[in-house]
Image 1 (tube, helix red, strand yellow):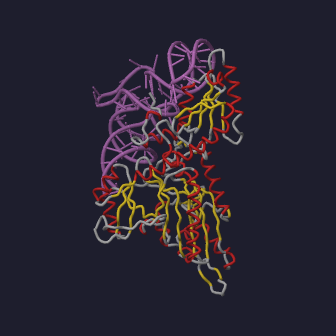
Image 2 (cartoon, rainbow, N blue to C red):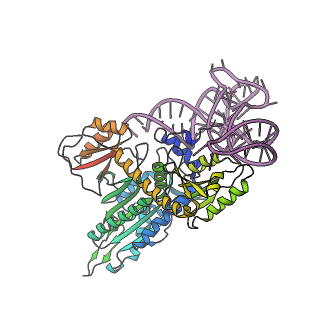
Image 3 (cartoon, helix red, strand yellow):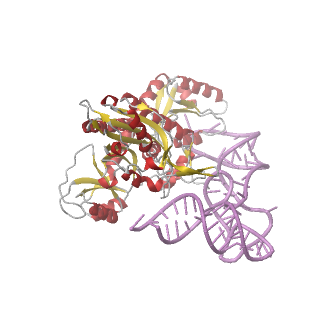
Length: 479
RNA sequence: GGGGCCGUGGUCUAGCAUGGCUAUGAUACGCGGCUUGGGCCCGCGUGGUCCCCGGUUCAAAUCCGGGCGGCCCCA
């Protein structure tokens, strides 16, 4: 017999649970015959579009202009920033022929768009009056992942939003880092995701950046899932791409730049992985393709009465709410319950003879699996408040889980045990690369960085060499 | 980078060691009946390039080689 997703445990068999759920809940179909490429089905696409709209709202509010840049760049442009090409060279797709002709100039398919946008920035920017420049685009980028691909988590075609900004001064660039973080924070909070905001260690920063800040969401298997990053590029790229502006006092300078990316597929993965349970998806109302489902419970001879009452209930819910009456007659209520729970619908209304007789509605909330009975007259108001309550509860649970996953370790062995138990280790580190390697080898996880949102002061010594620690860092396995 | 396991209707799966009958069963899907407060049941029907290419053989899902793809472990 086929294993239903509901037979799987999210924490024990995360991979199976996740893959089955993506398919059954019609998020993505991973059967497309090219490795690392999958089809976004209606529910995955709905969530993606909703995320895009949430993010676009934030980007527009803060003065970013949406543009669309080409898919490809050239060898020469791609190679302009030395560290950048070194970081991405091994995973870029290159187009070297058209039909039966070999291309004289090979085309590089974007793994990210710096080398596509910045030649244009060079043309657009002349004076300080052109700054700041803040643009963004929704795009797919392509990276030839050599490790095992995982749907939504590690793919070769990555749907994301990338923003790129240019500033006259270092302090304006720093200010922009804070704005970018605020934008992503606002969106992630709306989908109730728990994450760590980390400054990546130098050895793990974006190829070509001065420093990188990342949003690492927790995952039930103990790994962390990087859903967004903010990079301060300093002048590295503006020098390489010869972007210059004239200052107020007539000097020519290279501007400061930022780029930041928000991975839609990773965020979808985090929503499903963090909120879901052994019955399937649990969506916060902000992204739920369907927010309220009404299930009539027919009894022989009363079908009409029950259906009419269910329609009345449907009408008593405001039109802005995404609602549906599942009036199928050939499917039992039990099966509908399982189905809509798997699909993650936050609120279910059950209508049977009892409800008709009492002029009430049985309300089931997906997050806690609790039922209550509400008078028909109040159900519209009640449901809307409940949706907010559910969202708040999901946020609280995800934040708490994030905190519970973190454990302090004073020795490499303690850290190793934490990682083996699918948790995140908080350790002190001296900042030396050798020690980072010792940690990686002995602990089984890598240094993801130090907290950016709060200050944590090391009190003891480096977990690897025992010498003066420079920072408190988080060690985890990553996607 | 190294090692192990695996690929059979839409989905899951039996068969493979020891080659041989119309490739097994469940689920799904369609029609009909019965039912409906947590996946009910019964009947009939639909659905297969056994991952791909090549080889061995009278005969290959099964054996051999290569490829592609998936999962897991180690570095």
